[in-house]
Every structure is written in C-alpha cells, then in structure tokens.
Image (cartoon, rainbow, N blue to C red; front, side, top):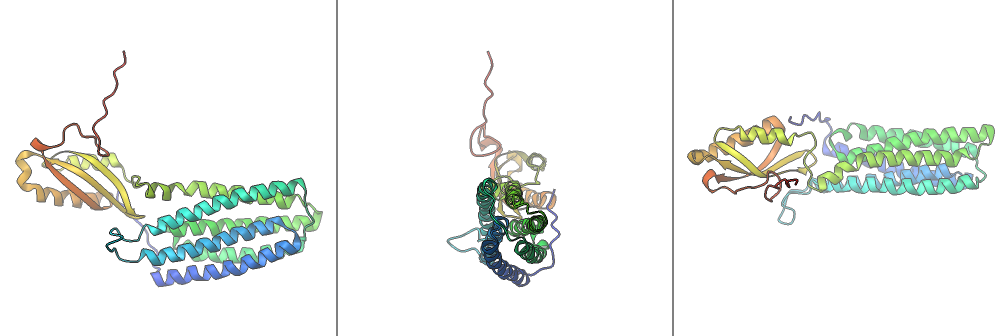
Length: 313
C-alpha cells in the first residue's frame, strides 16, 4: 500500500523556531532543577534534570540535523543529506538508554541509604518542570508524525512530563509523611519508563540505517505485481530499502520475454508507475535482462544464488 502521510502545515522555518524555543526552555529548566536537586538533596529532581539535559542535547542534535538534511545532493553525498535525521534519532534513543541505566544505579544506591530531602523544593521545581515539559511536548507533537528525528524528541518530552508528575507526587509524600524512600523509588520508575520508550523506538532507525525493507510495504505483493506486468517473466536480486525516512526504494533485475525485448522501455514505465501508485515506492532502479540471456538460479533477494533445501536421509 502507498504511504499516506498526513503532513502538518508547518514549514521548515516555523519548525526550526519551535525546536529552538524548546532548546532554550529545557536549558533553563535543567539549570534550575540541578540547583534545586543539590539544595534539596532530591535524586528524583536531579534525575529529571539529567533527563531534561538529554532532551536539550537531543533537541540541539535534531535542530542541526533538520538544517543539514535540507542540503541538496553533491559529489560527496550523492543521495543527499536526508539520512542525517535518522542518525540523530539513533543518537537520541541511545542517550535515553544510557540515562535510564544510570538512573537505575543511582536510585538503587539511594534506596539503600535515603538522604534528607527538601520536599517543598521538589514540589515547586517539579511543577515548573511539568509546565516546560508540557510546552516542549506540545511544540513537537504536530511535527513528530512524519519525522523519526522529531518523534524521538517528542518521546523525550512526553516522558519528561510524566516524570515531572511523578516527582511532584514524590515531593508531596515527603512533605506529608517523610517517605524519603519514595524519591529513589520514583527515580527507578522514571528510568524504567525511559528504557521502555527507547527500546520500543530504536529499532526503526537501526532498520533504516541497516538498509532494511521499508515498514508497511509487503515485499511479496510488490514482487507478484511486477511479475504480472505484461512481458515480464520474473524478477530477482531485489533490494527494498529507504533512501530517507519516507522515501522507499527498490533495486532489482527484471527478466523480460525475448519477444517483448523491443518493448522494454514501455515495460519499464509501466513498472515504475505501478510501484509508485500502488506501493509508494518513489525511487526504483531496474536492470533488464532478456529471458534467453538472464541469470540462472538467481535468488529473489540479495545478489546470491537460490539456496537448495538439504535432503534429509
């Protein structure tokens, strides 16, 4: 099926302004939370600050990636720079994973020996953090639907907002009941949620960078459709991949009937229109082989030969 993306009406300049605002908001919040965490002795507040710092770094990386991705192709990058956003998303998810594991370690140490914690400082700064996290999540929400780079940021911000709610709750319990163990326990909970989000999403960028088949495209259906084109005998050595996040591509060898070789240009046009209209594959490189001179025993995918099934004795 072709990809039907409901693009938000946000231009590059407007999107850049939103990300820039989010960067500054997270930078100011990070400084305030670290100072408050040190003064109050709250690890949960420092944990939330570290998460916000990772958001700020992620936003900066994403901002730079958005700028670079708009560069035209050149002799050094003949496919263009669009994949830089995939790289940025992978960096951001990896950062989330590292932060998550570190917070679990620190939270465990604090459970063993809970320190004195200033509950009101935690509640107040947690409330400020919630406002900033909600703002940055809102700024990136409408942009994340069509960009894995911005989606990584949105998940950062969404998890921050939820973490801030947890920090406020923990601070209130400390003020009311002196439950100091709640602070590191909430820290571990935040960390586990961060890891869940990161591991759930990191597979997409890895798949794209590994030249995996585009998600949402049925390779078998594409192969069958091309084989059914008039004059086509078979296809082999097919490679499905993504040039960029929303640019599916196919490279393949097409075997044409010997008697239809004089129609090869018409067959090529038919296949290209079919790929784009029915499957959303906007880039295709087709190498044609005449049936009587085609590769023999070629595998459907990759560049090898068909694998024979071993016979059991």
